[in-house]
Length: 468
Image 1 (cartoon, rainbow, N blue to C red):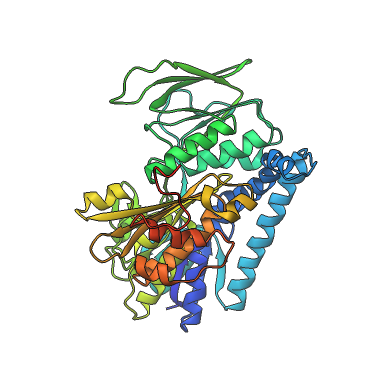
Image 2: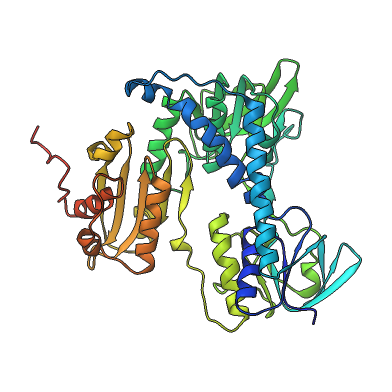
């Protein structure tokens, strides 16, 4: 065998799997047909956050005025895009350096299975390995809509190559990407931004309180939201793009039949990047092209594993990191499993929202008795100091033992606070243990203890009902 482990794909799952394999003493190679870092580094998490960071001071000008600061921001789009590209290049080169320092060989080319132990790279070089990890990720999926492939209509990748900001723009899809793109474009100067969402709320896979918070936040930013509608057609002319709308299945007739914009971004979902891999040749089981795996990341073929977006469990970079490591550790004799409930979901709106574990709906569906504690950030001194009093910290716990089952956070530092809950849940923390912890004051994190006390209506910094 040429290698102990051969990894197809150099994104979050693949490159971290290569590093972990080296740490455990295995000879590993990463085969990448495009750029190291995958979608996350090149066309996803990193460039999006770079643009959102530019949007923040623009959106916060009113807050700064309240603080006594006379600051006015103006956007230099070319400079912002250049900075974004510089960050991507730096991180990408860093990934290459990490793999090199861990003696993981990087092979450029497209991989295709010959048999369960052998892959051909770009039709020329064949390499063999005891174990093979599929980590080819996902690609944008455009819905079956008449006219959707016309000029001026882009996938989620389109925002990273824009040279100007459209005056009127539609975002098709009200998930995390849709909200982040709408925030960027509105802050960058688009006069009309509209989100069209098929379901009856934004972020339909997250806690309903987070959905309501985001709907209100979009309204405050001047972003229009059309819920319970689907785009049924698209047509382009000199005047722009007309999107035909109709109510989604099971909803009442809507009063919005079309939207006129200059540009549209389709962010309704992704599909697995399996084309050309030759999975059928080795008998790797798939469901709608997503590679089937168990919690150990093993496929239907004993020595073949799959990690990251390709298996469809959690299309998040941080989930891919863990899955890649778990796959390699199991290849080398360990016994690790992936725990989806410990993977936080974050939307980097301004302010952000985050969630981990169960929400009330999923807990009730599982037949669990729960208690909920909510702490309003309007009662947080640090939130007031930051000028961000809107939002909440919500904790869900088992009614009998107080075991923390999940948390939802809306407001400043949500993406940092959710990690405290994630770490606690990994150690099976209870609300009583959270109450015993001493959090710094003032801080956003002290709201975690307050939410734990609020589970029994004992939050110390919340007015009792009926007292005022």
